[in-house]
Image (cartoon, rainbow, N blue to C red; front, side):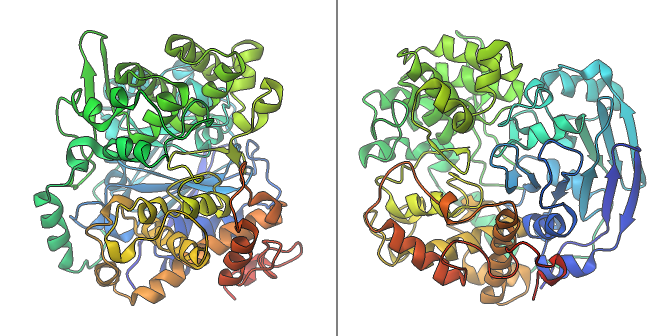
Length: 562
């Protein structure tokens, strides 16, 4: 089994010092990416760490396939204890950062402690430098890019930075790269903000001795020649279909379809697209650079989830208004899904949907924690809902994505079981229920019978992809056999790696107090409790959702792989 190579770089932000450690045993067992970061976090982060305190640690990792020239590999991973969910969480970003990260020669970078002043951390193959940057305090993401270009001759593809939201510890703040790509979910931008890290830069020409199977050529060629609708409309290609089958959250989750969907559809987004957009090495090019000259807005996107959170869920039927919100989210450094849902909750409490201008004003207040309102909205739906007097649409504190589980019932189950909370990409089970996959892999959208083991397997598969690291939109090209060939292992053995990653996440969260009571939904699904039992049984966990031994207080992290 091939894996990432190189040492762990550990940066002590308090002392502004670094050390390097051999982690070959972890790399060999967990491949790279999310797997390696999860194992490192499990072993090195105190189970009772405050997400916004000095004991929390941030891990940045790539996988062995970032050394390929294959499509679907322009991604990397970030892991820490989330200030939004209070559990261990990983986030995944595309763009061009991953290859600049691998060029440093490090397999993983760990950030620990807290700085007293805003820092830029420059990681190179010949070492690390710390630069105090009080001048960047309050800077929006494009301003950080301008600084890096002027002062260090680096373009945005070399940066991972936070905006004002991260500095103000907004619980759904994200970490931005390439200005418009995000480590989006679970609030890892606030973790960097708590550590006073404004920006990290990566650069180098280190090469790794990783032998990638020639099947990569076939995957890349097929990605380049495919006439796939995502090449034109990205993820928004599913918008009208989701609406048709009643899986599009609308009016702060009070409805499942939107009469104004045409104005925010894939066609509407495509009409604003002015060039192709892609990630490193990827010929699939499913990104969406868009602009509207009349409104004076240019952005990348919106993707489907943003169309939901700032469109249908706020009753907004104008794609240009959604583009404006998307651009503002990127500039301020917030997750478009959590931010949009939180603003929708607020405007619902005010009986003022749709009001896109007021929505953006509320977002600005949240990003800066301006006044009582901004401070409340910066906390996210779970913490704000009781005071707003609206229903809490979250799981484990994470706001809901689209692909509504009240219609796509297996997706509903996966929202509940996901260690990240209400995240659609943890298992991507929606793809089987629309379906967006071959009929041989499709299942009926209604009901939960027999789906629990399938959800567990899908979670394991996606954990493997996140360790590789491979884009999940490779599903039409990345067969199990191809993935096995690329990682030089039997697919079932690789799936077992994914299962260990999910189990370590769960055990870490168990040690923080998570159990079955957290695997819940704000709506009823027939057969849900039986399906939850079947899910735990498929994983070999206790009926209360705790990993035997490993997830119990007093167990030894050193036995994590036993």
